[in-house]
Image (cartoon, rainbow, N blue to C red; front, side):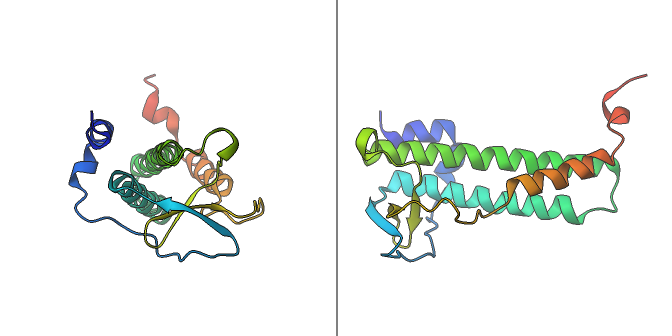
Length: 161
């Protein structure tokens, strides 16, 4: 069975990808070590990952900016954001695992931190830098979401008294 077909069973959106989204980031020879070019099926998964990241950002903006709507709408926005995070994280982990398998990055070649650079080049850090900033500060974002949820009367939505 072909890898594309198996991935499309998990993510039907993959069949709708007509044009791949490449990274805009160039390889930096100081911090990147190039592993190889992604095959087409991994370019598709990477594209879905980029689309999921965009959806996650849009859901975050929506959950933060629509403050004057009803409690139910705020709850729906927050739930949408949480779903977008889960989908992004699932795709990211799937991409990482498939990449590790495709490029034999298990065992002594193991690398947990992978990235994609312009030209669909898979890279790993030349040196580990644990202090590199995250794209989204997840802890801060979750604290903001929890603060907004604390202002909503959830009992009214879930309890029948």
